[in-house]
Every structure is written in C-alpha cells, then in structure tokens.
Length: 185
Image (cartoon, rainbow, N blue to C red; front, top):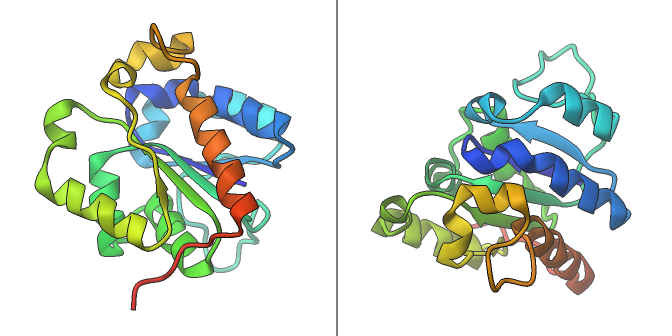
C-alpha cells in the first residue's frame, strides 16, 4: 500500500498513518511530494516502513525500490495536487503515482487538507467531484480537522477518530468493496 503525502503541516505526522496501515496488515511505503519533504522525517519513515521514501522519478535503468501498490492513500493531499491530479499532470513523482493509480484500478482514498479559501475554490470542488466519479474515495473532513495541530494530537474535541484513522478505515472499506477507480474515457 502506498501513502502519498503532500506539502502541508499534517505531513509531519505521516508516521501515524504508517503505523495504522501496518496494524491493519498493509505493507506501506511512502511517496512524498517535493514540498512534503519539508515536513516529513524521511529517515524515520524509511526505518518504519523498511522501504526508501520516494520523492523523485527513478532513472530508466533503476529497479523499482518498492512493491507495486495494491492501494493508495493520498493524505494529506493539497488543493494544488488535487487540481493537477484531475488534469492528469505528472510533473512530480507523487502526481504521477496518483494519476497511474487511477489507470491501474487500485483502491484510492484522498484526504484533502488546506485553508478554507483554497477548499472553497470552484475548480477544486469540481476536480474533487471528477476524481470521485472516477472511483477515488474523497474524504472531506469537517472544519475542526483543518487545524493542523489536530493531526499531531489525535482528534479534535468531540470527534471520535483521528484523520489518519478515518483514512485507513475508508481504504479498508474501498478494498473490501472491491470497487476500483474508473479511468476517464
């Protein structure tokens, strides 16, 4: 299972999602967008997963350092990434991974994180609908989850699950439902 994290404050806690994935019997590895490398601890994630954290495209003569992903969680995924993903843009390894996952038909869960103004942009909302139409399970968390400190401390007041728990539970459902993303025609 591949975890794709984008450059936003919650990426610093991605090891929590790795732990939950392992507890759920997935074999997770991590791909970071270039900006996510500013937030996440690459060395820690590599020790935790046993795989190299991927951030750049490999050269044609390099072997793939991770197994083929059987599922993908994009969490946190930024507005920039959602908009490029829906357009099929592959200018980073993280985006190429997400675009390819739709074409490969593996279960995909996306959990956006951004500020309210970005989340309200019409292009972003349209692109989320499009990704959803293609089979991506999009989880829009309530506003208490948009406080990045919540992602570090577990759950916002009154909420029963952390953002990471919500993401892994949705991936479990997606994989169990046998629903695969549908590539656009």
